Length: 310
Image (cartoon, rainbow, N blue to C red):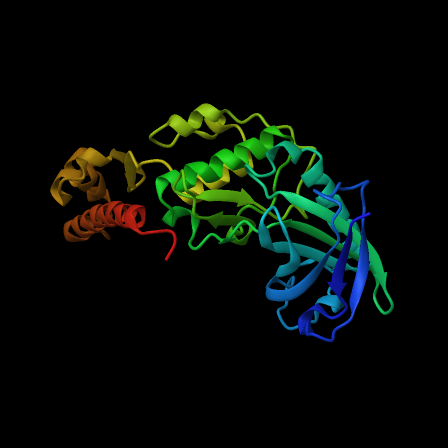
């Protein structure tokens, strides 16, 4: 049986520290091999729940760390460990491991990390301890969805669609820490979705993949799924084909000048009834709306050409 030697005190790992021998739980996740391993270095804590100051063993939620092993996995000596102490955290982690190795098993190495094993045991002071060991897929997204290049946005959405088609709704995809990214030899980047602690694994999705080919924003029914539609809107994946000016939809090709915008919307004539709004104010608002659109286009070009990796 594969064993993972996990430090008794992960926040203070040193040469003379004690380790807990955790056994592989084959019923949850069969390890990728039967080699026993020991964590020799905690490189960094990626997440400690809601606090970065509480010791990991005092948390009631699983925490995440990047670690170095004495024996590499798949030629890599660093892994991501998600660990939990106590009944609540270990049960939550067990469910997450079951999702990875159940409905998401076919997406490992494609849209989610490879799972190397799920290990359980007990500590003298804190009771249950579980550790889910997975592939190190890189760093969290370096910037918000709308500031990603179009190709990266589509890769992210394709992963999310595959997830939903497998019957899993992430329920935390708006947190960019749950999207890992790394350089790719064959594509712009590789993206993996992580952290399924709050996921719904009974999701029935009606998403229509064809919306990814749309150049401008479709209505919700064209997409067919709330979580996916939300990510589409936050990422601004579609081109803007119109703007709204005084509650009127105006095609962007009409934004040639403030005067033209006022003319195509007939705003000045309509505003004659409102004595509190003057012509110069309407012209100023028209120019501001045009400037906003041009700034949006410029920002879009800028983020498209800004490297994802430094």
